[in-house]
Image 1 (cartoon, rainbow, N blue to C red):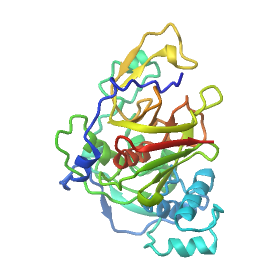
Image 2: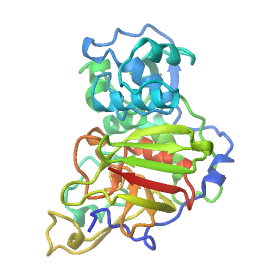
Image 3: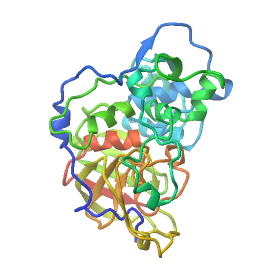
Length: 347
């Protein structure tokens, strides 16, 4: 049994993609103001950051933006090459460089001022490991400001430290160097009972995403590709897909619905490695939920596509049968899908 084990009757449905895409920009206390000034040079071991930023802006996510080469960057390059009718080498060759240069290139990093609304949290500094203790929390929120900043700029705390310094202060009004992820306008959504607007702002994700007709998840290469009309590749994300114990269920499925900021039904009897004597728990939503900020429910019972509390593990660690993405990639995908979108799980 897949460990994701969400029940569709327990995973609340949030606003539809159509409502979200019709949203109007509003003033926000969570907006990061870009600051002019001299940017420090990239650390020597982070020289791929501009490429990662460019690929993410074009829809081909490298997962965490850390400036390093690796499997996720290679996959992002292959996706971009596929969409541009180039050989899928995964290498930054001359043809790929020329295709990238058709879009405006931006610096790898930028200076931003941390807004007070973002710095205020709330945070959960002593985040418990036990599900029974997690069930007592009002929200499975970020542990601290550093973790929240890392998710907002699609990176890791270690990368933020490398771009700044161990002595750099963080807090309201402080200026820091961050990966140059695209700015997005804060949306306004009617009947936003699940707080999805704030989640999108905390993740730096736009509500207006292109509509897709099909999702393909590749088990061997650990990618998810989203296709629009005429089988056009629109976006690609790195994913973690199952394990030997809970393999990805190969075959053809469909999207049944999308739960934004879902509750999580913890059932130890369905979880490999869990204490079978422990009690069931209903965990409140939050970015540190076992399914992150999104649950995309599939026609395969107990299986879904969802976010994660550990973005740096995507494409590296195993999952319990379901398909995991970073929270920001899951939020983007949630804006693209609707019920009855085709989903193919292939070897």
